[in-house]
Amino acid sequence: MVRDGLVLLARRGKPPLHGRWVVPGGTVELGETLEEALVREMREETGIEVEPVEVLTVFDRIERDGASVVYHYVIVDYLCRWVSGEAVAGSDALDVAWVRPAEMAAYGVPTKAAAVVADAFRRVAAGWSAGPGALRATPRTPMLGSVVDGQWEGT
Image (tube, rainbow, N blue to C red; front, side):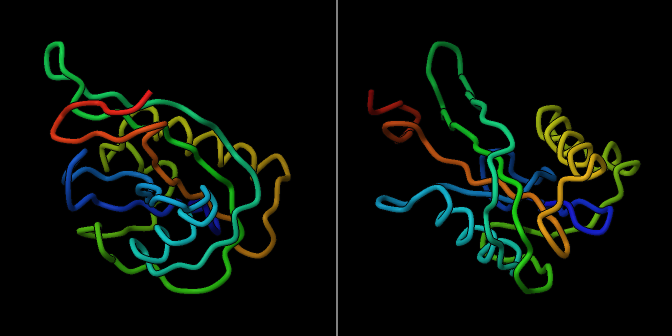
């Protein structure tokens, strides 16, 4: 989430990536659209209300333990409009922080997340505007199934 030249990071409170600083996000609940999940997850994890505007990127995060798949998420990153709220650590976050681009490395953000944040900053700098306080957020959702006890289920 980019706003006023800063990115909002959340320190994860549970696996995957427990304790790591990441872009806020979470899973899609059964029957939710991606946009509904994004709005709910941002509210629950950071206290911020957003309005999704456009998809920024889509990619996989697959964690393996030998030949077994521990989890498989398809991550959809959005650019959004800030609606209201102040950033506070919520349901799945140990902490939240507004960070300048030059400070990102000190937070140990995963490589792909750092690249996506850099792309969001480039788009904003090139004139993309989500209105007052442009920002970015990420829902994370299993694709066509879910991970249960380390086993991928679905098609």
